[in-house]
Image (cartoon, rainbow, N blue to C red; front, side):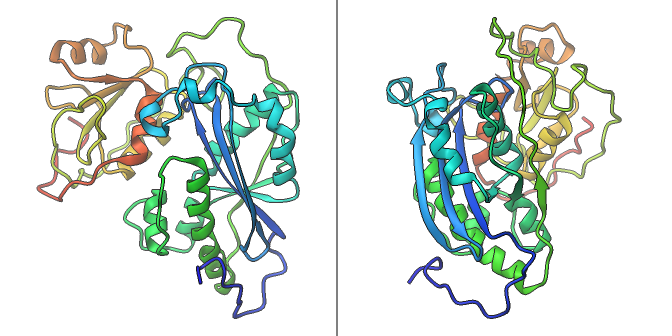
Length: 336
């Protein structure tokens, strides 16, 4: 009998908890504002986290599929898939009246909201719950906030990482015991309001990479003081190599505007075990920029040193599977 088959509850269920959940995972062409969903999966759960049914679909993004080496979905595979407007009604049926649950829910929700807006449909979601936030509320002893770590904590076996259906299954199986632990401890669930987009205008011309307004609005990156971060506990394994995973301890520098808030992007890199550098040197493992042709001091130095350069979307996908490294002498703090 699996964890999901056990429907026993030891204590009265909190009446204030939601009456149903939709555990969602989407794979996308990237993480920027104009990226598209290429597959989606939903596991519907009842009030106590028991699985009711599940659903999965490919989606034709009408553009390049992005980092195929991560999600495995090629243009040939997606060519005959339905467009998002063609599956919007089926998806809505599975989301209506339920709390959307996802791992890093802000991302899944933002991608869904934009697809619904492009289709001129209001997304039927009022609240979302992020399992990263829930694991923090529960103070689970996790080494990091990856889905695989949450799954391992609850003994859930991943079969096909970065396949939307399997990721949704894994999350559903890990969410149920998390939900019961929260209920047993009398915790208030970290629910957030979802505000659907009410308008959307696709750009008539594909925007230049690197010239997207950062999340938060305004179109201009706001000044922020540098944050002193603790030293990275892993030794620098060297430069990033194409078609290989990132490795803990790698020194990563950022240049130019990013679609994801820079501070959030840096925090995610640090949580994954990377060293966020404020400048580029011969020791830098890679530079992340959406405008590699810009004549900034970092891009100029990176090219002179032969430092690998990655676009933000490729970097954020690689960030989901950073290879572990053995702990060694502390690296130099990120104020290099």
